[in-house]
Image (cartoon, rainbow, N blue to C red; front, side, top):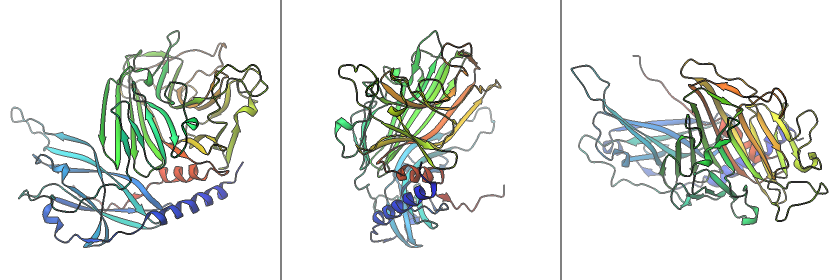
Length: 475
């Protein structure tokens, strides 16, 4: 195990060096008079409160315009990092999602005022313990003289995107990944610069299961079972790209799920948000979210006959933070019986670790090959919108190797309390209206003994830059 303070110091040192290297100043320009080219402007002040320097931190802000907005107002947005009140550097941004609310009045009944909104994403910089102000300009002025002639910038060395949804290939300087051309789930991942024989993969199946349900004697149903996403939308560009998939599951049509991936330039993780809604009462044995599954040999060395063409061990090691903040490392093949199953004292055969559902992060990695993948957990939710009971049946994080040729970790929302074949291995009734949701990030990293990149990325994810909001009202 590794000491928390040593680990955090290593992460901080690496992050500060990264920030210093990434903040080469460009020449500020004058923004005097810019306000006349836009209907609105606002100083978005960001404060760093965790003593962690930030470079390329994703920031998402909703911009709105009242009334009947001029078409294309979202094309007239500028984000300026202020160096003074009248100077600054224009930074790249991306519009990810827009919505119009224009209620129709009937029979003289009052309706809400019409409005249009759009989400803008940019990548912020901020020194540890400091503040950075970004002036946001948006909306066309009354005379229509918009921002056409004002400077705009594109992201240098931004996201590299090819293919068509659902079969996109996306990469930056940290990773290269592919989405399944049928379902749109993350199919496989490479750390940037690594060969294809070091791909993090699981046979021909996606490695990321955003949502899955098992209702025996029926079979499993996963989001990757979609022959095509029931609904999908892809938006953005080289600064940020967001890919949504949603709809009923392929076999269990009464379970409606959504999985959203957001990719950022210069950021080593993919942001993932997932929801699962039950529209009818359903008997289930397992409900899982946030699962990563990769190849592993069926039996350890000396443990029996190997199958011809057997896959390599993608992740020889698994790790997670222990209760005291140190890193707990599980050598997978050191805890397997001759039959290939995990054999850890105190838990059922097959389990490598049974952790809290909200364990901060779980990582799998290969030190010799120099790559790893981690799930960084930010939030989760379980509730019922129809007043029904919310299931509390052994929610946990499960890390396992059953000797079937793969290792995995997942975030079960419902599991039976008993092992396979026991009287407690039974289904749970989940009420209509039940809703599960998770938010996390999938981090591609280079392993070191302290897993400093994992710890540093997790700290930044859960301690984001804070908006210094001065308030509104009184109403």
